[in-house]
Length: 240
Ligand code: MN
Image: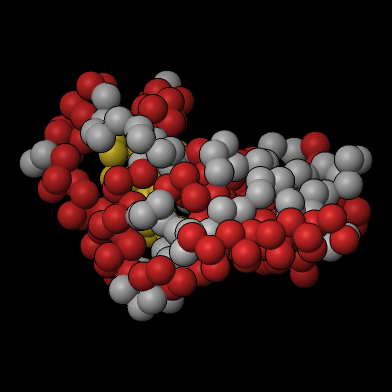
């Protein structure tokens, strides 16, 4: 961290002390070098934009530290395995055979982490639509009783994932299904191919500052910030 960034952070702490709200400067994170193949995508909104459902400090640490660490690791691996830089991430996750066996697990962890988080930031939005658009809504109603029934199933998948992982709504075998995955495993790793439509990070780092151990409270709150337009776009791609 350089002096300017330190001063920005001190300023943010002062803002928190004065107002009780953490207003963070955007883009204070360490960006990968310009020639690095993997880059941390910027959040499309300020850290505090998803409050009160997800707090600014969680967003800052989650994006600028956790996600940045996955990106840095991916760039390290790309030095050893240059094909990582030119292969679409989804393809590598689905078939990492070109990666040396001793690196495969670490590549999956970090490349999966990079893909999952990039997807996750876009899947949230302040003040978005409150429910899925018509095509996705009809498809959900074809697989569950109604949208609330689906949400209950999805919440159970998130709350039921033991330890760290993700819950997903995916298109698999031509229909919508709820799954969960451990660690940073991605639907793209499914041998029969599963295409993610929505996904929630249920690692403790995604919620413990605000919701402590209460994962269920976080999952409930998360529905308030879902970007249903992004979900609709993923659904169109998955169903194509
Ligand atoms: Mn995470």
